[in-house]
Image (cartoon, rainbow, N blue to C red; front, side):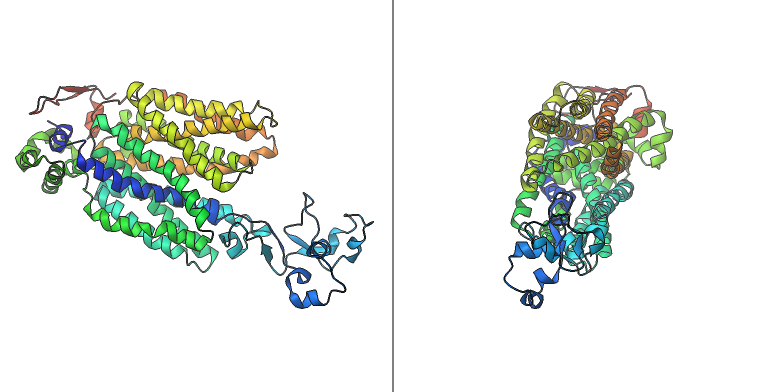
Amino acid sequence: MAFAELLDQVGSQGRFQVLQTVALVAPIMWVTMHNMLDNFSGAVPSHRCWVPLLDNSTAQASVPGTLSPEALLTISIPPGPNQEPHRCRRFRHPQWQLLDPNAMSTNWSKAATEPCMDGWVYDRSTFTSTIVTQWDLVCDSQGLKPMAQSIYMAGILVGAAMCGYTSDRFGRRLVLTWSYLQLATVGTATAFAPTFPVYCLLRFLVAFAVAGVMMNTATLLMEWTSAPGRPLVMTLNALGFSFGQALMAAVAYGVRDWAMLQLTVSVPFFLSFVYSWWLAESARWLLITGRLARGLRELQRVADINRKRAAGEALTTEVLLSAMQEELGVGQAPASVGDLLRTPRLRHRTYPSVLCWFAIGFTFYGLALDLQALGSNIFLLQVLIGVVDIPAKTGTLLLLDRLGRRPTQSASLVLAGLCILANTVVPREMEALRSALAVLGLGGVGAAFTCVTIYSGELFPTVLRMTAVGLGQMAARGGAILGPLTRMLAVYSPLIPLLVYGAVPVLTGLASLLLPETRSLPLPDTIQDLQRPAVKKAAQGTQGHPVLKSTWF
């Protein structure tokens, strides 16, 4: 009798799992808001140079006659590339000759202009304040804004590496609780950052904690749920990201100041930190690592919540030792990330899985940048991104049970890639078709994300599960960093970024066919479970459950 049967005895799909899912998925929505925050807190409003004739009342009083603001703008700010007021230059001296109706708009030289020596004036009709207006991240400093986003992504990458290892070493719930606290305190402190470098440092630490929340949430949901219910809870977890994207638009629409918005998305994690002490540690991890007494307490507690007190009281340390005898014999041997690459059967799972994570991060940010280039209302765009995700991820739940993990993972990635590649042959004039293909591609990425979160957890044993998921998260964030940089290839041809964005998921989808199928199989607990050609795990319990045979390739 292995852990899957122990979980069935205390309840693998009961009231405890419902309460746990609600408690874990709710913070995921707020985590998503941190991921999407720069779309709003880093929004770049329209701006122009500060000039005395427009922005200094004393200088305005010295102007002869009565001139309209438009006329003062004409003689103070040169036209930009789109014949709108230039965002980064101003006239050294008022160009009075431009008020002549017969004067040409080009009747001035570049030598008559200078950079914005006295700062900028921003359009605050949409946002009262952003980090761009706070620290003047425009013109020569405009590269600092994407740098802040890259630092955030780097924080998730480092956090995934560290949290994966620490969770396998010290426990899932402990790292999750610490991540909630770090997110709450550092996120709140970010709203009061005095300088831009301090802001970037705090955002890095926020991202570090975000990785811990995402990874440990998924693992706890998976390890407390039996194989039949696993796709449902993991799909609900993925839907948390979708609802979080839509919620981000609603919150940002109501809170237009970046500091207040930062506080709004950070303070709720104090509540998550408080109730996280109620969450149960993974009994599967506790037993595999030899912590039998605590594992027994967690199983009995779950039995009480699921109204199976008699089954919980029947469990003893001797019963656990008998049930997990084989796993305990090998589960306490030290395991490291090196085992993922050295062990042949693990290596054959690690490479395709990491590629899937990379392709999802890379393609998502490629599509997101394309959608932003459409010039749509950013609030509406954010809602649409979340709304499109919902049917895609819900449909994935059905496909995972009927088709299996491997074909669903492959098909979703290939579909996303083909939609992007199709846009390379669609004329730009056909905006409706191009938008439809982009939405379909985004839906494919959402489906692929849902699948990979389930698939990755099922492919790797308990002793290395968080390490493997952390490696995948690192790959996804590496893709997220490289995705925006790929657009720089457009200087050679506008089709090259689309070709790259499309080719990566298509090739990765084909590579994912090398992975084994894991549908309806118990989770492997040790590396030895994978090394044997066939591992039969009896599921014949006291209540007459059928025998499950699992083959780990």
